[in-house]
Amino acid sequence: AQSVTQLDSQVPVFEEAPVELRCNYSSSVSVYLFWYVQYPNQGLQLLLKYLSGSTLVKGINGFEAEFNKSQTSFHLRKPSVHISDTAEYFCAVSVSSGSARQLTFGSGTQLTVLP
Amino acid sequence: KAGVTQTPRYLIKTRGQQVTLSCSPISGHRSVSWYQQTPGQGLQFLFEYFSETQRNKGNFPGRFSGRQFSNSRSEMNVSTLELGDSALYLCASSFQGDSGNTIYFGEGSWLTVV
Image (tube, rainbow over all chains, first blue to last red; front, side, top):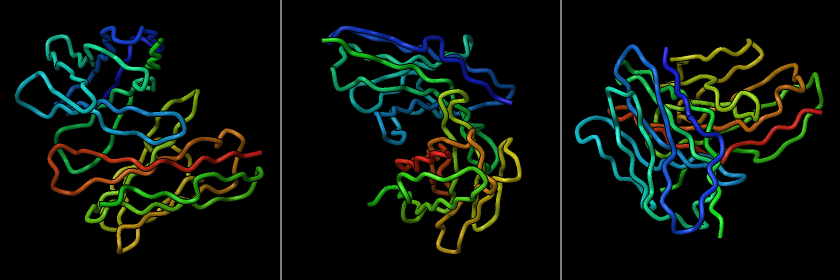
């Protein structure tokens, strides 16, 4: 079984400041890693994903994440945030083998960008 | 290309009733999965369908069921509703053969049980 831990439930940050949202995972098998964003009253939108290869992954809206296998982490970063980045962010994993499509999510991090 | 479409967006039901939620996946996607989102439990996997067959199931009681049609559209049903079933139900689709298992979500159906 897999599990995902998002270490911060809430992250307040001032506009134009950098931000890092932390994610750690646990799995006995290889996994794919994802970050999704959820704006109020909306579904989930994929920000970025790590499948293999380069450990630094770039996504939409200026976000990037770095996969660290030894620390089983997949932290999300943005060098300069905007008010419009205020949303809830979810880290997720899925097993990289087999045909089943199932995501295991962390509990989410509410990012609030302050003016 | 249209995204994942879910209907209805909002609904209110009474305890003991049943509800059916509908989902149309992205064109060409054959895998449809359902998730429940609540403030207390977060996002939890319900089940996944592929080619009209349930391929994977989460840890939910038998009151939660689903099906997929030949056009890949899917429905989920919750019978004998309980207050705790109040949640956002998210449908997601993915394309078989996508080795990255990218899953695209709809905007969800908000269910309130009173």
